[in-house]
Length: 391
Ligand SMILES: Cc1cc2nc3c(=O)[nH]c(=O)nc-3n(C[C@H](O)[C@H](O)[C@H](O)COP(=O)(O)OP(=O)(O)OC[C@H]3O[C@@H](n4cnc5c(N)ncnc54)[C@H](O)[C@@H]3O)c2cc1C
Image (cartoon, rainbow, N blue to C red):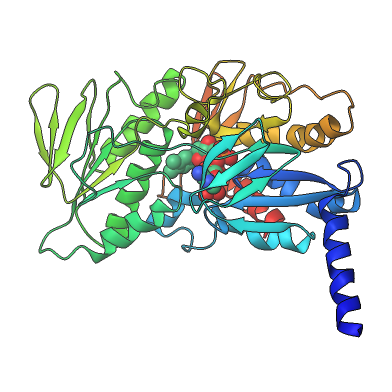
């Protein structure tokens, strides 16, 4: 009799749970990707839980690698895990849930995210910070001898491969791309080779007329000088068209042999937004309005490299993503409480400091640029403080 009664009560409880009206259960906030623009919210999971939200983070990895310190890992300025933020701990300590998995589809109508495994995660409001990718685009035959700078943790792999190089000469390194990431990779690779006592053979190939094309003239001249002084070859206005069998082929007929090629070109948002039928900018980033809200669905938000802000791509820099964090935090709550949303205003000027790996930094702020030890110390202090906040 007792067994029958307890079985009945189990049935009763499960019926109650299934039929609980929407207004009575906690609202579900889902963070898709634990990128830089979500750190602010994830560190405040406890606050969200106390306010009555169920918080879930879905990420393909339990760790986020902070980009500001990533290239310093190549030269050995930082240890491989020094820039690692434990996302799982961040969200679970606050009473939220961490789901490890890759998001492959967004079903906005039924308010679900679908993972590679087929698992479905339901939300009442969700925000995306999935970063960006470097597609192969037929450039490289396969990954032999080639590493992409994204995901960020790949800088660990660059160092590992350089240290593991087993030849009777220094490894020949080819960096494809002359933006900030490519220049930092080149500078820190030169620093590592120097520390190992190896005569570096490093070439940077870039499509534009100068390195750091969007930086002021002085910064462009400084980075070129820094790399050349340390023995790098820099090939401007050159497009790499094919990588394979240890040889890069270019549009102007050159053949450049390499032992390791680092791809730092063509950063673009993941294809999941377009594939899910959400409105995107030309580059495929989730089109968000001035509130960082998708123009296709009022319950979806996003920040960082994966969004297209009012149809335009903002510079692909962590400093933008970080500034979006508090806006996402407040707007996710506001939309579920039917409160007015906060506006995000991208900074017009921002400080960007390149780690040159040799104890110098190259700081760029608007039209100003300066290179030296002080710039590096400033960067180091800002970055270490940032990571410390989330560790
Ligand atoms: C080498 C290098 C150095 C850089 N240095 C600087 C710098 O010094 N300062 C600066 O401001 N910017 C720097 N940047 C740029 C910076 O990395 C990016 O702008 C920044 O990482 C953007 O962060 P995000 O928040 O958009 O995404 P990310 O920080 O890249 O995070 C994306 C997250 O989403 C997860 N994810 C991705 N796809 C999926 C999926 N399908 N399912 C589940 N989870 C997923 C990832 O695991 C990751 O945790 C650098 C970039 C590179 C490549």
